[in-house]
Length: 135
Image (cartoon, rainbow, N blue to C red):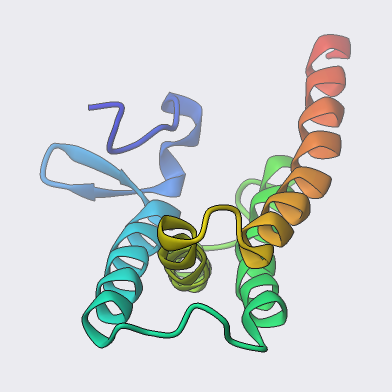
């Protein structure tokens, strides 16, 4: 079931084994946190404009983003528990930004998260691609 674990065989150490299923450790944190934060805000009819949305949204997104980037080069450096924890933080950040986005498309917090992830991911992806081509 690739949709539960988007990792190939050489990256299965980044997954939890639940019976015969592999579940990505970071995603195991991201999606439940995202759903919980989104749902609680919807129930509480949370305000759409909070002054700390951008700095908190970025602060909660940084650990998973950096963990992913470092993991491209040193895949066994962090544990699955750490990946799940950073996933929980990212999920909370995304739950907030998506809650606002659904009601007011492309809020500043979502755009800031997109810039952060792109600024980290593009150079890492290009560098790992170049490294694999040489090797």
